[in-house]
Length: 133
Image 1: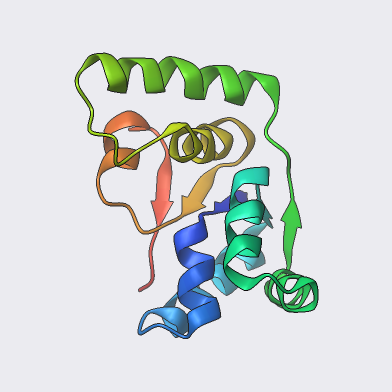
Image 2: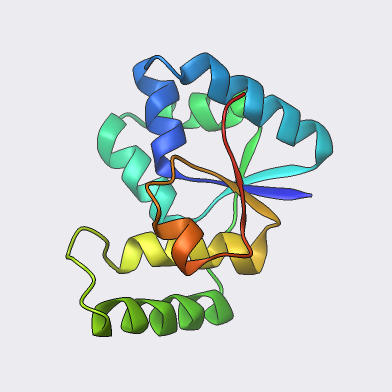
């Protein structure tokens, strides 16, 4: 099983938020079943928070997370779903990067570890979403 990791999870861990240890346990369990990956968007968002290459590498390496760039089918899926979202009057709170992360997980992984505020369940209903226990 391959698990994609959303930025929300990595930020919680990097900042030592209340759910950080729960996320670490969730990722450890997922890693025992397969590969952990981040896409280009997640890598860029995490780096923007840290602005420190060594800390960035230490977090990803320490959690056993690899890099998986978004492929063309995932990009196309994100575009289709975003267009539906936009046509339905979706608020500007979700932009293309959110849909790219979801489509990457849907196309290139089996699950995503994420804080879901509803858009993943709504626009990626078949995507398995992992949360801390």
